[in-house]
Figure 1 (cartoon, rainbow, N blue to C red):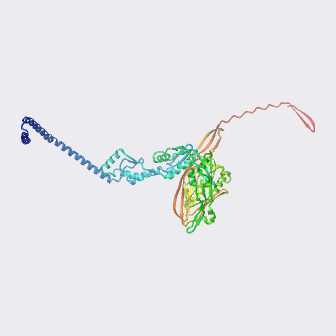
Figure 2 (cartoon, rainbow, N blue to C red; figure 1 turned 135 degrees about the vertical axis):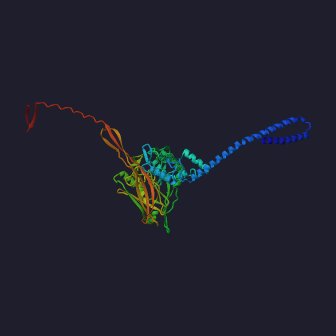
Length: 610
């Protein structure tokens, strides 16, 4: 009833409005009477439409309200759940479920627990015996380990990243991250750091030992000539590619390391740049002198320059030769450091000796010649000593003999073999003088004259031994080789603070060789001949301990070195022994034998009958 009354009231209102509209229409245009009926129809239609709209709204309101209420309840529930979920997560000091680091499950662990678990797994993997990695090219093999490069994972950052999952954003993003992590899991790979210097030096060392390695053009000064040694094309290691392969292997702590085939590329030597060489050797002459209070010794400097023009020197290089001689203009200083007398080098700073077999003539000659070239060398403060620069190319023309050297994993004849003993002796002398080592490489195999990690191998054109004079005053090397003893000493002026230096060698593990048998058809079956003796390899570390007034003030790791093992090779005979030849029987003698003998010029006949 109420609804009906409301509708009637509404109709009355509408009727009044209609009449007003009609009156206005009449006043505006009295001639349009015919339009009354359409207006009425239009009004009626409008009434019906308006009625329907009201009816529709009134009919659907309860459903909309209900939907809105339900939506609000859901949103509110989600918000409450999210807040509770977030608060619970914030109060939890453990890593979320479903997170691994290097494949190690750290779910529901505290930061401390996860750190211990991950580091223990890495330490176990990085032990010497568990992290051996072989770098190989043809018959050249080098064993390295994680410790060779001081390999370390940034586990702290990885564990912090794991812990902060679901904690670092707002409530919504944190909850989303938590759900995704628990459903899909998350693996975190920490960054692996390697000592770039150790990595680069190891690869450089391997590169120099390739039997077909590229040899760059090089030069040295001998008297009044610059000797330019022509390089040769060969293979060189793809350094960055090999570095990445090593990183990839060491990054995997769960599977056995695979042998790495060393990537190489064929390369021509860099072209000779005569202008650059000329700029490097050019010097103005300077006399030696000493300054007092404080004492500073200035060595003489001889003037050096090309005696011919760059264009003339380039014409010399057009000839096909192994070595080229470019004449130099040497302008001698008027006063040398030797003219200053012993006051320039009054004090013995350090000395070291090694022993060699004086009966090995060729090796003996090479050691003596190298020592003679080193003897008397003066190194100014801040300057470098380069063994290859001072000794020069080891050639027959320079007086060197054919000795033996380690090349391509084998002991082979090589001109200048034995000079490494001189460079190794200098290395120890420089260490004892507390000088800075700039470049040094270990041998492929251990040596008999110094302990592991105390050697310094050299090979002209690729491997050098270099140290820097880090003292205040000039130093002079005094070297000799006689009676089976190679001795090198450093002389100079003692400083206010002098230190005692001790060098230690520590073998961390051994690499045992194996015996390889090769069948030899030229040897009789059962016979064996040793073609190559075995050498036990090792991994070692060198340390420099510095003392002052009897107290240790520093202990420095000098190097981590790997010395390869060399397998014993035995040739085993497979040739079948031939059957012995049966001799032809001797005929039986006749039963009647006549013997004629003469005694005292008398002939006697004997007739014998059996």
